[in-house]
Length: 217
Image 1 (cartoon, rainbow, N blue to C red):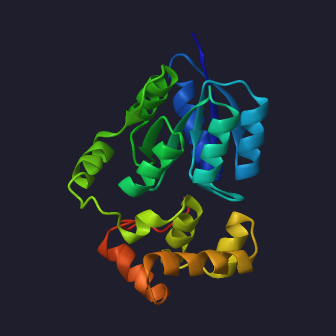
Image 2: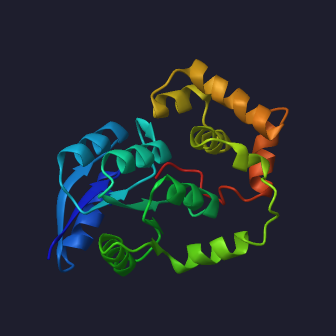
């Protein structure tokens, strides 16, 4: 039985690489590709497939919001997140939004094939390294930390602010106005009880929210 796979990533080289890996494995058919949020949603709506390999950071839409909407509209479509974000906080949010698997882009090609296969079969996939991070997080205090009070969109804005993106840059990436992003920033500061953006960055570094990765790959 052939597993039909959709690939969503804003980098053509990544899409080419994923297609090549799956083409060289047995039992996979890449049924479509998309390079941004709106295109991914349209692809998921129009194409019958078993698994969507989804990058969380693409132009035009917050990845977590996109993931949640696709799950609501296409509940039978299994979603494997493939991302540069190696932080368990991001993975936790992805699973809560409906992901069936979470894999980082540093993973080997054999692990990608194993992950797609397991997700397609109805299982849940998480890499060993991520599983260890989940286990370590169980020792954290039960009381919610400030960043855990944020919505997915607010968490995305926090990530981009800590990556050094300007209000205009974030607005353009998420297809909303700079004024809207300023409102989100104000909410983040208020919810986390931080006086300014520099305090947010210090907090993120102290809690290792985004490790050392600050790109949009």
